[in-house]
Length: 267
Ligand SMILES: C[S@@+](CC[C@H](N)C(=O)[O-])C[C@H]1O[C@@H](n2cnc3c(N)ncnc32)[C@H](O)[C@@H]1O
Image (cartoon, rainbow, N blue to C red; front, side):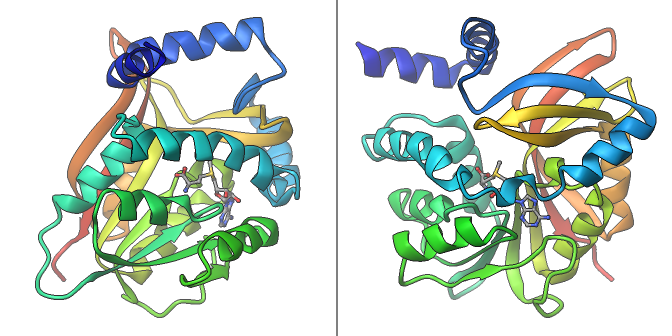
C-alpha cells in the first residue's frame, strides 16, 4: 500500500509538489528545503556571497544521505523516482559510438548517481566532483572503486573536452557565479552537457531565495528561463531535450524545474 502510494506520487509531479508544500507548512523545520525567504537587490548579492560555501557544512552529507538511501532502496525495488528516471532516460537517449561513455557529475554530493546508473544497468565510466570535502569523503567511502575529486564548479581543473557527458548535478542554483559554472561545464564536455533539476521562472527575472537546506542556511537561485537558454547557447550548447519535473504557469508567468539535455554545437 505504502509502496503503491509512493509510486503514484512519484508519477504525478503536481501531486508531489502539492504534498511537499503542505508538509513544509505542517513541519516547517523538517525536510530538504524549507523556510524560503525571497531576496532582492543588494541583499540578494550580499547574501549569495555570504552563503556561497553553505554546502560545505559537515552536517549535510549524513542528513542528505539518510533521504537518498531511502530513495535508492525504493529505486532498487523498481519504484519510480522521477529525478533518477529523468537522468537515466536522458543518458540512455544520447547517441554514442563504441566504448563506454565517460561521464562527469559536477556537484555529485556523496556520488549516489553512480549507484543510480548501476541499478539502471547503464554501463558508464563515472567520475564525481563536488566543492565539499565532507561530501567527497563520504563518496570515497561509499564507492571506493570510483574516482572523486574536490573541485569548484566555477574553476574545474579538468582538461577541455575531458568527458563525453558532463552533468551539472542540481548545483547551479547554489552558485552565485552560475555563468562561470555553465562555461566550465561546456568547456569540459566533449559532446553533451546535462543541467539536471534546474529551477526556472517564466515571465519574471531571476529570483533569489535564502532557505534552509537540510537545516543549513543556503541560497537558491531560480533562473529566468529565456536568459538561461541564451546562456547555454552563448556557451556553444544546443538543447536536444527538455524534461519537466514540475511546472506551475498561468498566463505566461510561473515556475518550473527542468532537466536540459544539450549537445555541443558544431564548430
Ligand atoms: C542539491 S545537491 C545535488 C546532488 C546531486 N547531484 C543531485 O542531483 O541530486 C547540490 C550539490 O552541489 C554542490 N555544490 C554547491 N556549490 C558548488 C560549487 N561551487 N562547486 C561544486 N559543487 C557545488 C553541493 O556541495 C551539493 O553536493
